[in-house]
Every structure is written in C-alpha cells, then in structure tokens.
Image (cartoon, rainbow over all chains, first blue to last red; front, side):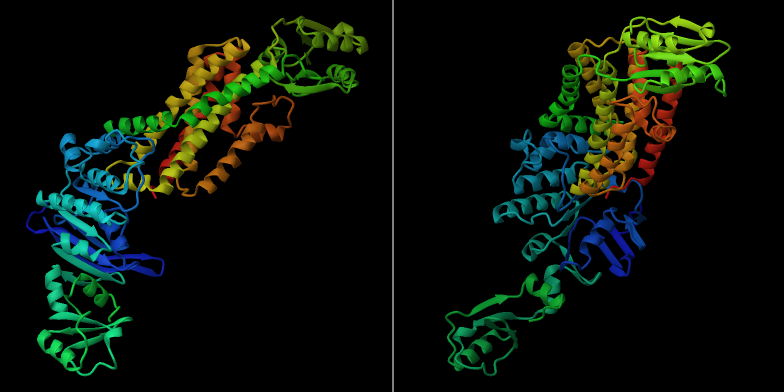
Length: 296
Length: 341
C-alpha cells in the first residue's frame, strides 16, 4: 500500500449512472486518515450510491476509488467495516453467534471479549439478534462492523430511529472508535450529529459535492454574525429598516446580522417587544438548507 | 474453510431453532405414509396389468394373437417392456400381473402367489389356439403393498420440497431482507456461501430421509431389499441435484412471490409425473420422455429399484450419472447467475 498520501480513501471522477439518471457525477473526494468524515445530503442527492461505491458494494460506471493510494481490489473488505442502516441478520442466531459468524469471515479480527465490552454487549449476548431494542441492535451492528478491527469504518445513518439517550450513547462509541485512530465515514440526516462527530463534512447535491471542509470552517464561510428571530405575532406592522439581511419564515422574521447591538436597537426604536426574540448562532441545519437550495 | 463451516453451522442453527418448520419437515412424510398405510391396506386395483416384452423389433403373429385374446377383456391394461430383467422383477413384485413375450416360442411369466396373475393365465390359455407354442415360467415373489411401493416416492418428494423451498426460498428471503447485501460487504465469496447452504441442506436431508425411512419401517413394516450404502449414496447424489436446482432458481430472484410461483411450477408437474403416486409404466411415450427430464423421476425410480427390487450399483450407475450431471449443470448455473442483491 502507498503511504505517501495522507488520504486513506480517494475517489477520482467517480460516476454512477442508472440508465439516463446520473446518480453520482464526477465525484472527487479525499478522506484523510483518522478523521470522521460526514457525507450529508438530502434524499436522492447521491450519498447512498456514493457510500455503496466506496464500500465496494456497487460498481461505479466510471472513475477510480483508491484506498491508501491503490485501486480497491479483492482484499479491500478485510480493511473496512460497514454498518448498514437497514440490514437483517440470519434468523434465530444469538448475538454471540452472529459475532462468531462474522469473525470467521476475516483473516484478522478483534479480541472478542474486548469487542463485546467495547460495544457494551455483555448483557445481550444470549439474546436473539433479531429481537433487540433499537440501541442494542445498532451497537451489535457496529460491533459487526468492527469485528475485523478495520482501518476504515462506514456508518450509514447509524442513529436513525434512536431515542436521544441511545443516540448520545452511540456517539460516545463513535468517538471511542475515532480515538483508536480509525477513519470513520458517516452519513446522517441529523446535523447535530454531524457537528458533534465529524471533523470534516461534504455536502452532496445532485450527485456532486457542493461544499467540503470542517463544520466550523464552512459555517464561518457561509454565515457571518448571528440570527435574530422575531415572532410575526409580535410585529404590529411591516418591519422597518434594520441592519442585516431579512428572511421571511412562515411564523417569524429572521434577521442575519453582524451588528447585533445595532439591530436590537433598531427593533426597540420601532417599539417591537424583545420578550420572544431568539438570538442564536448559525448551525449546520442552516448551512445544509442554504447549500441544498432551501434558502430562507 | 472456517467461513464455510461457520456459514453452514449458522444455517443449521437457523433451521433447527425454527421448531415449527423442523417438526413439519420430519412429521409431514411420516403422516403421509401413515395415512396411506391406513387407507390402502389391501389391493385396490380393479384391472389386470399385463406386460408385453418386445425382444425383437417386429411383433410376431403369435404374440399379436395372444394379445388379442387378452385384449378381449376391457379390464386389462398393457405395458410394454424391452428389458426382460426389470419386467420379470415386476411380475415377482406383483407390480404387473402377467408378462408375455414374443420369440421362437411364445413365453409367459406368472407369479404363482398372484391370484390376478393366475386369472390372466387362465384367460390366455382358454382362448389361445397356439397352446403348443406357449412356454410358461413361474416367478414367485412377495407382493409389494402400495404403501411400500410409495415409500421411496415419499422420501423423494420430501427431498424435493426440502431442497427447493428450504434452500431456494431461504436465499430469496435473505436477498429480500438484506442479509445477502450484508454478506456481500464482507470477504465471503458467492461460492463459500452457496457451498455452505448446499452442505447444510444436504446434511438435513440425509437426517430427515433416515428418520422417514426408519419411521416407514416401524409404521408399515417396510422390508428393505437393497444395499443401505447404495441407498445412502443415491440419496446424497439426488439431494445434491435437487438442492442445486433450488440454488439455480434462487440465484437472482428477489421476490418471494415470484420464487414461490416458479417453485410451484417446478414441483407440481414433478409431483404428478415423476411416478411418486402411480407407476409410469404404460404411460404414453411423450409423457415418459417429458417425465425423464425431471430429476425427481430418476430419484423416485432409482430409490424404488434399490429399496424394493434390491438393485445393484451397476444398475443404478446410469441414473446416478444423470442426477450428478443435472446437479452439476444446476450448480454451475446457480453460481454464474448468482447475485447478492
């Protein structure tokens, strides 16, 4: 393997077409080793197709996928771990049996006790693997992704459907995976999750990456200042001139401004009550909506 | 190899922990046998079955005349034979009542323990003008009850359902619910996966067949005539062929409904035309030729030859070659066409 590059995974002009539909269009992506990379995009943006191509599940129409500088080949699956969003496991097998089954697929594997303890599976080892709660199931699926001690781990919407507590527990697990210097590629619809876990994100739209970088860097590039939101019910008439850019939302008016004091003063000057005003910094939700076309 | 064994063990566990399916797999054939043992406790056939052995291409005038005598009774069914050994065996086993052959002299075989055979003999002798040409040979033998005759067919039928639905349907389900996609994301090869499925089901079929076989001995007092080792080998080759057919059917389908339709399309004609329930002796040439395309036809007839007639390795070799060849073709097709998703 070529170690002259700091990218563990790279795609070059990756294209996937289904008939006339181009799902992924000339995708060039570089994922650095040891980071958590988040692939974001609305439904149909092409992120699942991209993920399945770099997981070597789906064949690209054209383009190249390089793992440590070399085109992916036969042994690639020994180096990666995958947690699918929707997957079934063979029926009637206990958790421990599923782990043993998957361990048998690989030349190299993690110590079973360590894996069980890491993913907090001790109490459910003798349970039917298809009769677990959402959180338990996701921990098992993560353990299956880690069973071969992979260098690169793919997580496809791993916390969809989990309650907030289970989600946060799962985040802890992902952080501990990262702490072991493994590279994680994550897709999610939860922007909070992407912000919490990802060192770098790529936002996809119509089969292309339209923005890539660290969440903070992208936020600072696209947003300046803060957002001030005023409920429309507190407005007695049309809003007069205030410093900043106005966005008309269904129930409120949002002002993006770098001069928060000046904007507040202008609102007070117009006798607008500040009792229900919200002041917040822009987050990934805002960035995602802006980048994917739902500009407010 | 560890992957192969792990997959095979996983599939075995999946099967034996499904108690309903497991129970049904073992009980169903035994229930069928017990049902037939209860329903067919005597000879219920109403017609005479007479074999005509053709040893030369043209039929002599004498045999035609003898046939005419027998044909005067509308209760007689004629079955053509070209192989004397198997035809005589059928007289011994009471599967046909009488056998006549052409030749320099007209020869006939009758089982002295068969009342119907003796009756046909009287009918023939009573109306035949060429008595001086007739040569008689007595071939005694115990009658094989219908239920005993049925047992090899039930074994084969159970094997067919277990192979086609147990393997084919299971793989389609795996494909539909994403198990195969998950396996595709591992280093497991299609060959390892298919081989493990084949081995797991083969093991199960051998066990089921043994239980059904010994159950039949207990329930109906079946008397095995042939070699146990040969039967074991024959069932293994047969099961391998049927499982491969299941794998070929399931190689690409992702819909359980479509799989069920195709499997039904395969199993129902085989059920009725492979000689499980009634003998194909006397069926038209077209039907016989069509039936010989089915692996089940060879499985049923071969098992019957071993279990009832005590056939040898040599006799069964052609059938085993046919089944082995069919199995290989199905397996090759299944492997080439196989898709994880």
